[in-house]
Image (cartoon, rainbow over all chains, first blue to last red; front, side, top):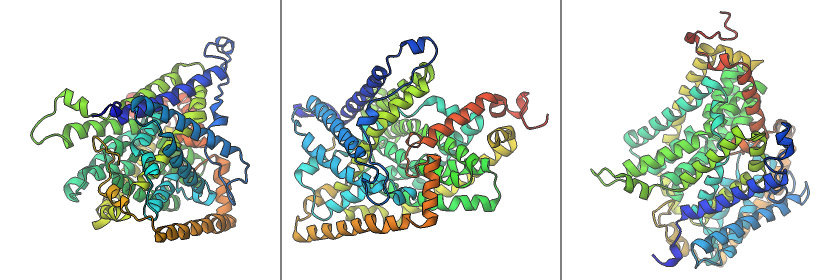
Length: 455
Length: 113
């Protein structure tokens, strides 16, 4: 391999994400007067502020035109574009000396992602939970299947880099302490049902439906059982799924999310389920985190609180699922027939970015639990900087997928209807098991917990 | 064309196929037509839909609650942080209700035992 290929994509992604996370941590500490400032020592607790929150923004929600709430967000979006372009170009130059002009294609991809994000922020679109991933994919597909992709734009379509950078930054939002947020009932609804549904659905796809692609099977199983698009991204990267497979899984998930968000609240009311069981059922079954909040809110405040908490605990599963899938893939799926790979072989093939993801998660979880004012500090670091950059990275990743995908190739993955059948069967199992577990936990084993949540 | 060393997230034949997409007048025309349609939908149809009382009320209701229906992760909506903090506060105040199994001997609130 030439000198220009010194660093792997995983390492580049970890360097970019590590830089962004470090900057966000550092500026929050500096802006707020330092970890050991007088206010901390005296026990008052600091008021953590992250100056990045003013400089790095996402487009604002809009109803008639994108600038109705002012131009502030455009300045923030430009700041985000500048930060991403500078850090990525610098890391590319450091890791792959030949790609010194990466900033040019990177800016083009960012501008198209900006367009996708603006479309997604229209309030009616947002209300139906049609997130930026969909619009970024469609814009990319539109360009690649009409006028084609220029060489410069093609050089910026670095799906792997953007996606893995976003995933490592997502690690900073996975707080292990949140696993226990709802006590034993929360653990049983989120951490018992979800892996069972994931494993059974994957088994069903392989043994009963006999799906040609194990990776497509895994990505659909994970996005349906865990938490939609973010879980799909993490497992796709962990099992090296094809771009078209991720696109297929995300498309099915988004379509069913909208349907379930509208259909489940009236169904729960018709069945006479209480707000706690109803909320737990919504949280355990609807894929997308945002749609869970919207459906839960339709059932009342108690249901919203339970639904969003159950989904948050499921969110924490992403890292474990990605790690488990990566280990399973390198030890079982990709191994040579009849040969058990040794530890060095597993390490050689293991996707290293997952270690970055887990490292970021452990670091932020430790700060959350142990630092004075830890929860506020972490919220400032995440809300102010890493979450915004992570969202831009995912948007750029989906745009890149669209730019590199041919509609005819994509159609092949839906032929025969197996992905759809897999999703529907898996979701039915998820609906049944989640309902039974919610009833068991909140009506039989922990009725006191339901009483506390209803107060 | 860039090559993925280990096949991660690689495309099938799509990258080769795309190079064959002609940058023709037909392509530009299709792009222009779709762009005009998108502009009409986003700047005309969707705002009109958003002004309908039912939809407007729902949007305002969700905004008021701090819910972002298109959030990918709990950190993307204010309700996520807020609700988690509220539940954690209640769990800390009533540990026996959330951690005490009925057969463990710990009294479970609300069971009358």
